[in-house]
Length: 207
Image (cartoon, rainbow, N blue to C red; front, top):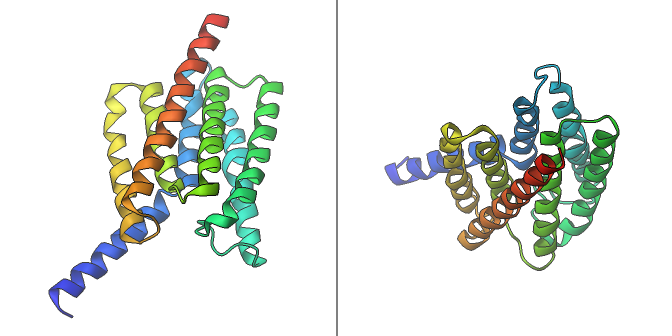
């Protein structure tokens, strides 16, 4: 195998690894598990983060895998843009159900705010996906790292290096264009971070 071919194989394998390890359900799940850390009572409140993961990540992803198995959608990344609207709607229903349950059980405000920020980002990305194949991977990793930095502080800024890495992987795999990953990161991260800051401030003022 020539050096150029070997480099291409290695590049593709690295891109596949990054795309799989940092896919949306994983990055968002880690963020939600971290969300109770900043509230009093942790680690006793860790289960609230796990409950959020169930409704925000596990149930929607399980439903997607079932739809793939039934042949209703092509793959678990929902690469066909035309299939994204119903999948997004299904995910939003699960998110809203989880948000309602978290409110009922008096989850820490950091968990509620994080879920609300995710909902807002999913709505915006979902609407755009109807017309254009914006990157969900880029949006998810950007919102997860941006909120983690806002929540945990400046020492966590290096986490944001994951954004260009994941964006690169999606372009290398030809799942998206450069414009689609850049916009996914800007929109996903920007909407989520903005909402998180506004909602967090509102909850602090409300006492």
